Structure formats: C-alpha cells, structure tokens
Image (cartoon, rainbow, N blue to C red; front, side, top):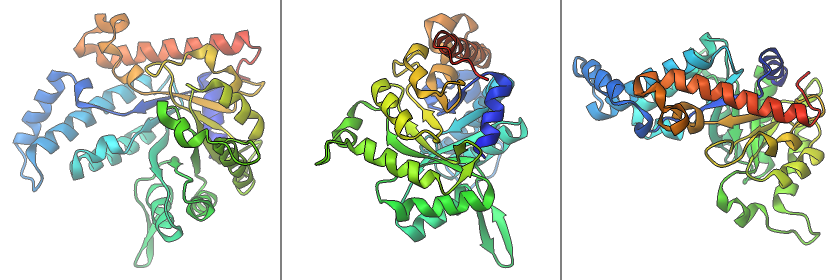
Length: 321
C-alpha cells in the first residue's frame, strides 16, 4: 500500500494529506440550515440534532473532497470528530471514506487504535481488513491506512501488521506526536540515555521489516512537524519508514521546518493539514471566498501548502522525484 501512496505523491508532486477533522464551528450556517431541512423530512430513531450535524458534515466533506481531489493523493478523516455525533456521525465517517475512494484518493483513518491482541485483531479487521460473517468476509470501514497507538507493545501492533500483509494495507504508529505535552512521556530518558520516542522508533523500524513494499515499509510512523529536531533523529533511526507529519499550519510548522523528515528524493514523508485547509475560509488570507466559497478556499490553501513544501524541498535539494 505504501507504494500506492508514493505513486500518488509523485504523480501530483504533493506530499500532502488533507485532514478531514470537521468541527461544527467550521460548518457554514447555510450548510447547517440545508441539513436541518433534509433531516426534518425523514423518519429516524436517532436524535434529530445529531442527524443534522452529521448530514452537514457529510455535505461539507463532500465539497472539500471535490475541491482537493486533483491536488493531493490522500485525505485523513479523524474518527473522534465523527463519533461525537453518535451513529449518524459514524455513518458520515463511512460515507466519507467511500466517497474519497470514488475520487481516487487514499484514505488514512486517524483512529489511534491499539489494545491487547484479540481487541487489536478486531480493530484491525474493522478498519483495514474484513470481518467473517457466516461463510463470507466483508469489508467494514475500509481505510487504506490507520493510525496505531503502540503503548501496549508488540502484541497490540502485530495484529495490525498481519492484516496489512493480508489485505495490502498500512499503518502509521504514533512515535513523536505534535501536541505540546507529548514530551511528558515521549521525551523521558531511558537509563542508556535514549528518549522513549527513540525506543519506539527503533521498534517501528523492526516491525517495518515484516511488511516491506519496495524501499519503504507499510508500517509507518507519526512524527509531529512541531518537533523538527526529533524528526531529524527519527528519519535516521527509521530509514525505511514513511512518516506521517501532523502539525503543519494551524499548529505552527511551515515547509522550511520539514525538510529533514524527507529523504534525498523528496519522499519518505507526507504532511497533514486539517483546519488550516478545511477551515481556510475563516482565515484572513482566504476570507474573500466567504462561507459559500469554503471549498474553493480549501483548494487555495492546499495549493499554497503544496507550493510552500515544494519550495522548501527544492531549496534543500530534495525535489520530489
């Protein structure tokens, strides 16, 4: 699967993934009103407000995907932002994945799963594999990649690796996350002087050998753009690991901070921006598009991000090839 992502990055010259992390404050009032009218005419067992929110999010995602599908290789829906709306929200998560696939995009499910072995097997089947029902096996959410929390150790990660190998899928393991308090645990020093994030990176490097797909493994890592020095260290520790890089834009990182996450061919990493793109119309730079032009503003923000990262890679001698 990682080879398909690399092909998409090369084809579009865009190591960028758009995070579909909808918040109701990002949704234009007109979309909410339209969703409310649609839901009012239905019979449903679910709360009308939850259905309205989920319907508005679906229309929002649909238009964002249409606006960026020819620019970027992938999108990354964050499951919690859908689960907060209950069953209707989960249906929107499912519909978003399917529509992104229809538009030729790779889907990274930001689900941050990881548990004891049998539970991880169920998570892996739900998000990346198939579930056996009677004599058939059925896809459930059907993402191409999922994010995985390694805190429970190898027996929480290996079920995902097995499913990746069986179904040509991939995972991104949390190694050094972009949030401000990540260092409380991830930067702690071991007795030998290594930080916890370095130890996890070494494990990811070893796990990656179990699922190679060309020069890179289907077992990737999440390393925050907000920590470029740690990213430089981890790039060396994990030479065959593709890195998912959150933290661009709204969290403060810019293209010039990211070059050490990439290899010499401008590959090895894909950078995420969520609200910096999907809520671009709320930013001063793009407010001329207005709420009705939220999708066009998202496209403009994606184009600017691609240019920023491309320029930084070019200056570093790492243009995509």
